[in-house]
Image (cartoon, rainbow, N blue to C red):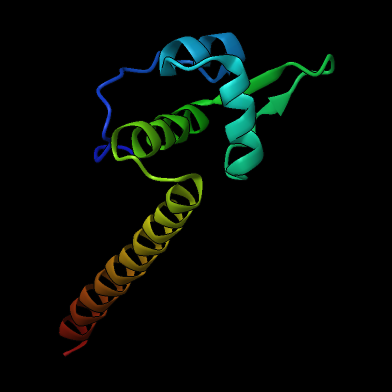
Length: 115
């Protein structure tokens, strides 16, 4: 979810964000974040020994995507889950295709060297 993000929020360059920070960045209350965490299993913050949630940058990016889908695109929770799942599949397929293309090019170069 790097360059094709639907949001313009520049995230601070840090490893972990506390729930209050994420709430402020995303613009939703902490209870909404906790609810989304229960609905979207890919949101999986680490926990401190005292139980405090620590979100990674990719968690925050995913939360921003979810907010975009739910609030701006008017997806239902289930619709957003399906959309994220299909995006993940497309990204995996594209990655596989790109890797195969690179391998093919490298094999052609090796063949040309051996000829």
